[in-house]
Length: 231
Image (cartoon, rainbow, N blue to C red; front, top):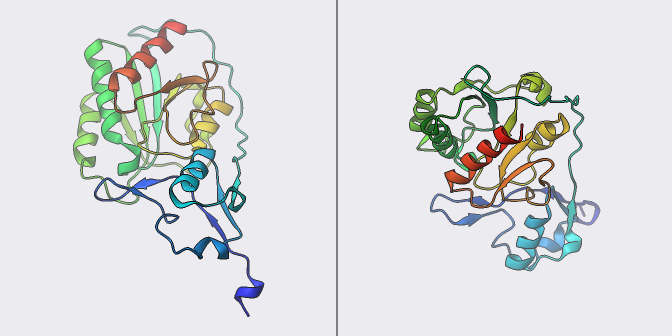
């Protein structure tokens, strides 16, 4: 009787990696009738829908793609000539978990330092899943490269004063359509993000830089260099 009068809604935003590096989602490897009992699966990006359809045969009518709404104060960023006195100011925001790839960020900071690019890097976050064995080393590498590590913050992007910043960097292995990217763009900040999840359909040359091979640190370094030249 309960089943007859109950509608089941699920939400999921990303296909993650399991401990052995394989793809994992609660949508995968379900019984044939599992999706018959689900009214809608809510997500924020079409690529996840396409992947579930291809791998599990889920029909598109089971999904609702809902893009989050953000409302951040817009900041008009004035042209800047970057120098040692006025370095490019970068920010990274996220969980200190394996999916977010803090080790990539450490490689970017080290690469900028080696290239002699004047920069600052503020890193906001904390570990939630405690699943990243490289986290202690990544934190040490970031600090040695001059990054400033801050606790996670609550509230919108305005809490970290985006008017003082020049770009948001995202280094995730997998994503949906992360709110922090929408908030940064809404505030007028360029973004440098990997081509994963819903991000390729969101970013263009007017809003930032799309890193096609997220494991290629050189692509991130080239994007930061291009950012400094565009200004």
